[in-house]
Length: 467
Image 1 (cartoon, rainbow, N blue to C red):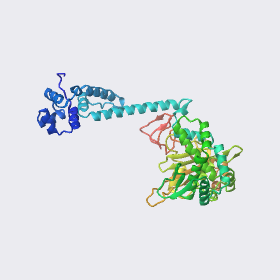
Image 2 (cartoon, one colour):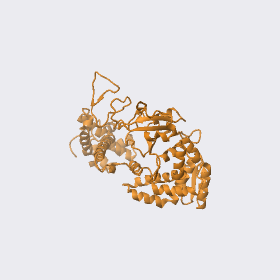
Image 3 (cartoon, one colour):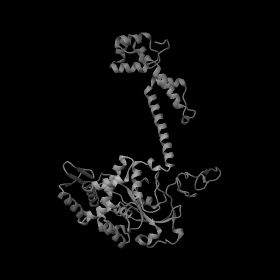
Image 4 (cartoon, rainbow, N blue to C red):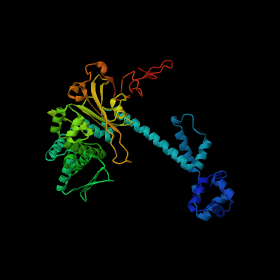
């Protein structure tokens, strides 16, 4: 052993704890007093040679484990981590580091692990920024973003799935409760029993028992949609898989997520079959409530379907569709228009979809202009979803639907709006990070590609000026 004083209280305490001994019992076996053992365990005294020998003889302890090597290496690692500029001038003294390594090694290891995670996160962010700047940027997408882009680049229209759903619906009445009963009978003909239950997930299918359980706490439109989703998985699995093969996703997770999206697409297209729905949309001048009543679908299903009417040779109005929660997070987005939604952050706070929560049960209309000069007609409505019982939480959501202003005449909602008056259009953006408007009173952060000037003696709507 080195003649250097050996402080290894943590190792001493760990040994005693592992042996299941009290301090009094351990002190007796080592031949020292209880106060002396307490001082050694708390590094107020070095471990004596007699104690080291007693540990070897009494417990067969490998005395090399008491070496200060681990503690010194930990001190070195902490000094290296604390040299990171993020700590500035806050690095502790060497004596404090040695005290931490000796008395609180678990805390020291946790600190080192946290710092490593921090550095790895910075490296991942730097890598992501680099990849987003390259032509092969899609490789940096998350699975969710990859799926979203798949639907976007298909104009939100998947022809084989859409036509299969349309054929499926031709032989069945898929309206409201009658549709629920019709699909239940259709499944029964294929040997699949449908049960409507309380206290179950929204949809649960047991392939072995061939039993489909649907929550009765949901409304008829939701029950029908979930049953049709399962029909897509059971009867049209090969079609979905073939479509996924063509998509060539980069990860299996993206493929599995997209399969859910395709089954949802089938369900929506079956409830709202393309040809019939396109005709009724024109007849009602895209009145969401009338379409909801005609097809026994929810307002969200109708609005979503309007954004998918892009069949070659029989296209509907190009709509954008979005769903947001109360925090402004976009939870669903589709756009057949030039307006695209930001990948990161929330949507522009000046957009009327955020105000829908303040006026439940009402449609909000807005004439809006984006920084590129394109004008839109925007419609928003809250679609809060009750949980089905007194104590069940209510999902608070809102939907936004819109189109280029040139199509506003085809919408009943735009009849009394002054669409020819440029001053009637409100300036909105996509996201503060990429919006070029200089004087927006709702701006939260400066645009990424613009520098700013700070004048301490002048203040406008913002505490800085965008150059």
